[in-house]
Image (tube, rainbow, N blue to C red; front, side, top):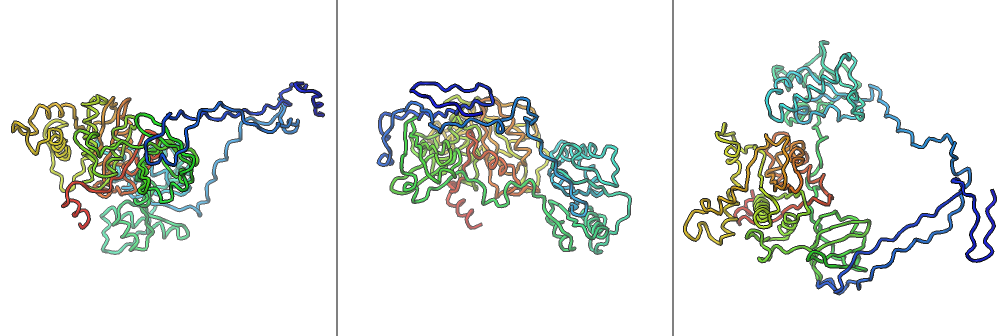
Length: 563
């Protein structure tokens, strides 16, 4: 079809064919309206390099070249047989048996992660008979290990069905499309299990090692690998020239040094590369800046940045878009006028932490740090201030994992809260410090009464509840301040269970030190605390700070350094 004739005078319209295949509409792109700025310059050391505030401009239509008319060949007709939806991606093919690895799972792997059966991609999984026997012994009780044992048994029952076990059971039967291998069981077929006499076959670990040796004898051309969370078992396997690996699927990070710490120091040339076209305005008593530059692409929402130089800056990242970022200054909690329940920040990281804890827009806070950095004290002070002073929360709920450092002390009588009190020594210690800071005393009140017997302490204790992890399922916390202490001893599944208890108006604070993990088979990379720090990174309503400097005492600081 030929193009229409050009107009002969201004304002004339071009007659076009109105069929859908021949009409092209140029898209209209609106430029964003800039945010309102303050009418006066911000009183900040950066004022010297700030540009003048500009008045909001009217949205303009982006000019574009005339859009050419589409041809019939480029535009499908209404009766075209071209499908509208894209064809589904083809399912990955299974590898031949000779190319698959065969992973022999130890019992502790299944008890640690019941879904580990489906975490080996295109490779096969083998379960010795002794593993099924140990699962049967562990299934009784209400502990996390017992629940995982029962879940593994349910998975196996659903997988097997009426399948022929000698030929293997496809692992994608239950909908796990990523598991393209098969599950094999130890059958009645005899297997050569030659091991040194020093390893008695009456022990389950040695039986599994013997089975791995027998599988290598039966299938010499296939790679057989033992997977276990038991370090000693892996050492014995390697001593016997048997391949052995740790279960790493649940590891968030391979190196704990790569864990996000929530703080970024700005380089010395930051203002040289980002000091042009800075915009500023006042909002909620803070100064906000919009900066542009290459480093802005590395910022994470709610990350803290600081610059020490001629124009010092401590700010929080509020928004990132490409090479643009919005920063806001912080409230100075190191000054006595901004003290929280009588507590002031003693270093930079503590000030960052208090800005997160006192911010009502932050629903989840995680604090890491070694002993004596002030994690529990800052968290409890913020909770008391927002419960009694601002009435933002109705209650403070404290829980923790009950994993002993030494020998278990056995049965504890009393109610749920009385059973948890021996684990809450840190709570009592910090309440004493906070009470002394609030009344200005040094161990007793003005009338000589003990600090823990005053009416004020009775009122505080009435708003603090100590709860056990065992009774958290099914609960919903409304307008509560939930503190999870010693969170490094929790598994990712337990952390998920606690975090999903939060209802409207609830704030959750996770505290811990990943260098002090007491739970068996948990490491710095697989801890639940590491898991939530990595998963909540960048969410606008979550923040994280790693406290670096100890403030407990000079003795505690020196002990952390030399012991």
